[in-house]
Image (cartoon, rainbow, N blue to C red; front, side, top):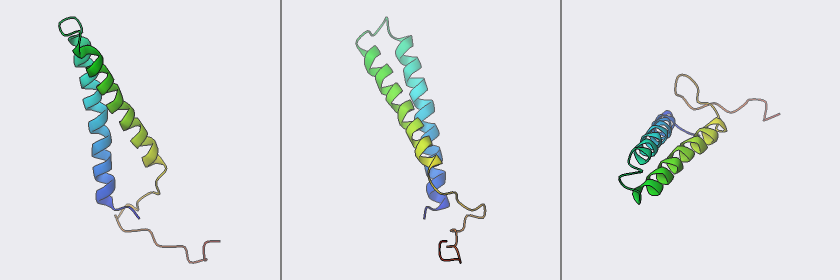
Length: 81
């Protein structure tokens, strides 16, 4: 099972990717006239970061939930029926 520490780090990584990606795209559009060669790289790299963050959000939504106290979930007593 996944630990609480894993989910904390995953959460931080997701939002770091999304917000830094948005910032990089914004910088790309801000410098598009002054640095025409950097524009496609900055916008592309930023868009990939935002997309990676979105994929991680989807993957996190498919993971089993962690109990509120941070302990590992106990297996079912009924034998999985």
